[in-house]
Image 1 (cartoon, rainbow, N blue to C red):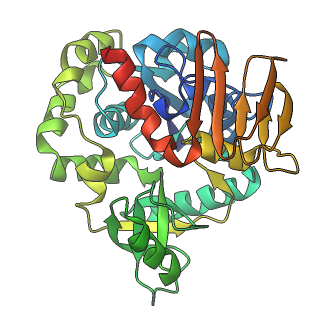
Image 2 (cartoon, rainbow, N blue to C red):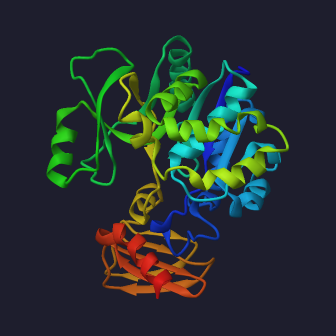
Length: 353
């Protein structure tokens, strides 16, 4: 394995669209959402360790999840778990991790990957990642792995590249925000748009230079602690300064400003497992397209539902189509799949009430 390969595993999200299974106390990345025998973070860590030395995989998470990470990934040392003392989106934590890696190994190339996505064809993922690493060793490039769209999805941002570009790795023309349905349809039909899956690859030199250029204030904030990184003083510096960073994503902070952005259209199956509907797609289904997690069911006139309960709970349904039915502890959710994006808003209403 190449000692210059590193990974930043993003594991700080709450996954509120998967409520009530995914909660602030125990988010979806720590659940075995597909009944595969491994949680999503365990599966992602295992996939990355096919190409990256285990000791070079850093986990970025909120400090409240530290014990869960160490319990689920016993091969990881405490110094590999970077704890965010405040929620500050993806740019600050990526800069923090990148500077730590730079101090340790200025020749590093790294992948930034969400911990809660599902990728079945792991050998193809490894080949795609190797292709990106090879490119970033040679070129001053900020790279992303773009996902081939399978339908006009309005829930993802898109990456546009030049139709005439025949290279396997393509120069990005622009990033596009989550579109309405008609725009998504035109993106899908045009053939030169990819879903933005949030997987990024670059050398430590390229990403730190990009932060210096596009986010000078944030860069100078984190550079003040450079001498403390990878020492006993690091935690004290981060605890005092992290919350001062702007709450901004890596897309807005760097990727949408830079000109040296490239994309490799991924050739593996991918699912962001962002909603109950996307989980429904991946689970085995009965002849009426119902997907069941843990429950025992008796279904009549019921189709295209996803039903999730504690183990062996008996659920009897008659006359429901396209619904999310989730029974977890003291919460029962019965909600139309067509409105699944609104679950996040419901959770915030409950917190306020």
